[in-house]
Amino acid sequence: MGQIQVHEFIALDGVFENPAWTAEWWPWDPRMEQTVGGITAASTAILLGRTTYEMFAPAWSTRTAEEDPGAPFFNETPKYVVASNELTVDWNNSHWIGPYNPDEIRRLKSETEGDIYISGSGQLVRALLADGLVDQLHLFVYPIALGKGEKLWGEGVDSTKLALKDSEAYSNGVVHLCYGPAQ
Image (cartoon, rainbow, N blue to C red):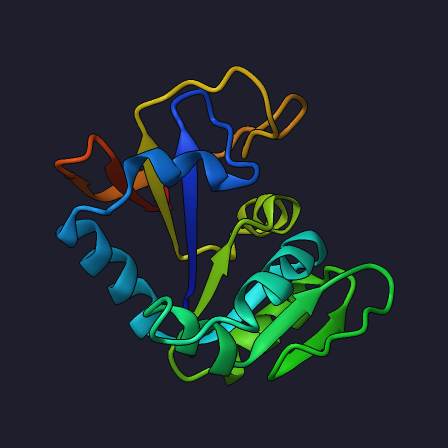
């Protein structure tokens, strides 16, 4: 049975929208690269919301391993897309699974050998957290407050209690916080 591993780049003020703002912190600290690589290496499936899928597909589908070591993971791993309306999924190994349904996600978890990776996909992640389906939430917190943009937990989102499982600070000022369900 797979575990859902959520990976988010997030600013101090909670903004996670379009993380192009993280470019200032490149290149990554090698330990940060190892942490992100460990999350993807354990994953045998990718779960995405519609908006993130529509951003990722054109960005990753033409990248090669020489351009980005993450390209094989994103291009070869089976991808499952949650979207209310039918969606043309033409990126390699992509499958539309319909609107959000916690039972469908539980089925996907039970049938997946290895973990299920999620990045971005705020609406989906909030629903998964509310339904207790996130096993680990990996927040890579960047030392910047952006002041505007979509927040992972915006106004009107229900309270979410989590337990800190691990943390690590990197030389570039980014902090990795790994949370799991609160007991």
